[in-house]
Length: 63
Image: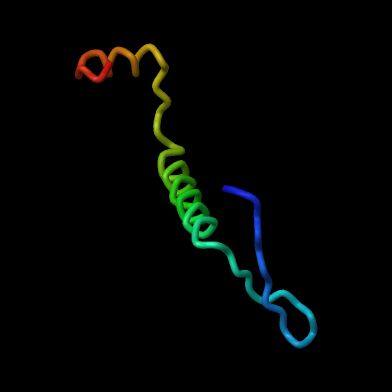
């Protein structure tokens, strides 16, 4: 994300009630939330060590 340029909407008491973000900032936030959701879903999966990943990638021709 580039420099943060956030504008706020305030109510009559001066309390912030909403924020205005650039489309780029909004899309980056959505992507980050999606990534975090994937991490949360996979938290209980068993970890795979680097050697095994390399072996699998070599086997299927990716490396």
